Image (tube, rainbow, N blue to C red; front, side, top):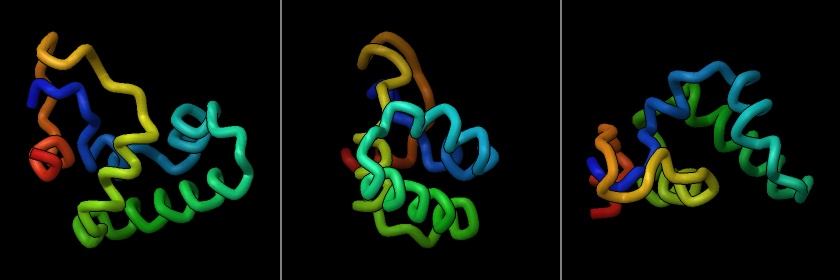
Length: 82
């Protein structure tokens, strides 16, 4: 829980529009952006159905919440990676 990785609820608990405007603002590749948007839509409607590898990919696209070891944030994704 000290890795700095986001949690699945950080994705599914945010409105689709907010996620699109904040997390995806830095994705310039249109095809990658479309894949991410599809994944977000799936994750928002099925937060527990996603394969762990899909969540890992999403976490890899996001900046860490903090430097590893510098804070705590519950993260199922971090636990899955561990």
